[in-house]
Image 1 (cartoon, rainbow, N blue to C red):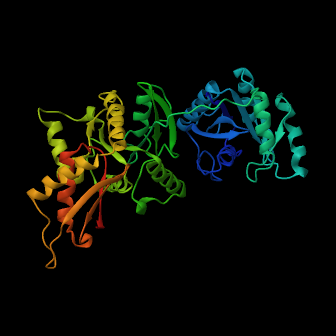
Image 2 (image 1 turned 135 degrees about the horizontal axis):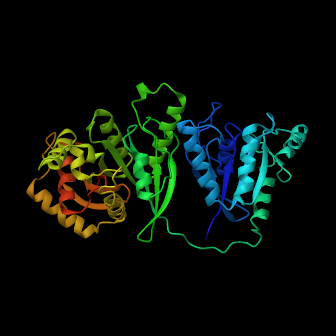
Image 3 (image 1 turned 90 degrees about the vertical axis):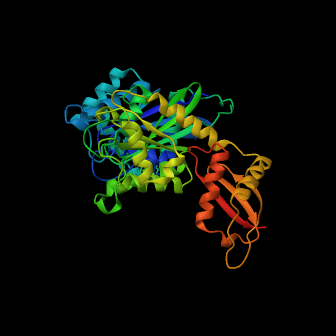
Length: 438
């Protein structure tokens, strides 16, 4: 079922993100008293009276400012209005109409889209008369709300349904849940450039300035008919280096995006190489049990010889042994070199993570593994592994039943995992062994 799209536009700090979070009942967009926090388009979905609605939160629209960020934010807001079915034009009731409001009102009229003028920060009935000062914008009768305490937001949603002519109850359809792919890495490694390259449009703002992306931004794409959600995230730095609270909130959003994803792309900069912070990010993703693909971006900037890629792979895997079990891709988001492999590999990893290994095949493989190298005795006790079965997908958890589960050495646990990976295709998927009392 097609969802109606509503774009929320307005100048900076009128409460767009607060209203957006109120509708979604979660802190999806970062909110702060500082102006210009939101930069990219942020999508969120909710239901009202059984009708699915998709809202777009946009950055503050400043008509006549040509700062690198303001110009890009303005373009993002214009794209949001272009793809929407209805525009919510939000103004600040306490401040009254401004020159920016006048310019944006003219743009809303020219768009030809149905719109609602929303006067925010009317926190009580005594402040409702603030709406009358906005008649000078020449728009239809405005509605008073308070995004902070939720006052009259239900009335606004009712008005949205009327404007969109959503009167009939929607028909129920089953929608397949597709792949959710998070793109993470340190600041300025090319996450937003890769997102835009995969979408073949400017979905997120890209600048040479590290930290341009702040929120985790969803973008939807069809890949060979399969639904894919790309999640562009803010760059992850060491916590000790984070001094700004906005960057801290961005880091929290990125960590949440990893937890909600099925597969995670970890990007590094080919010129900077593989560092300690990159290892920490990979560790975090594996610890969360997510499918992982390691992507070396900006490969076009590297001077190449015959074995450059092979040597680079060996160096990364030498530095961080767990990456033996995960795909490594070499791409250039700027020149689009090999980026087609990203979605192809991501879907392969996702499909692998959804497989359930047959218990009979698992135990046949386990018998061969143990016959080749039995578990060493510990504390004078012989360890006998009797049985194994896969008890979970995403992450893959294999339960092994034995007589002394606490005595299995870490080295033997690694041996078992490596051998099982050789018998079964778990490439890109974390595998956890759970040793249980028979």
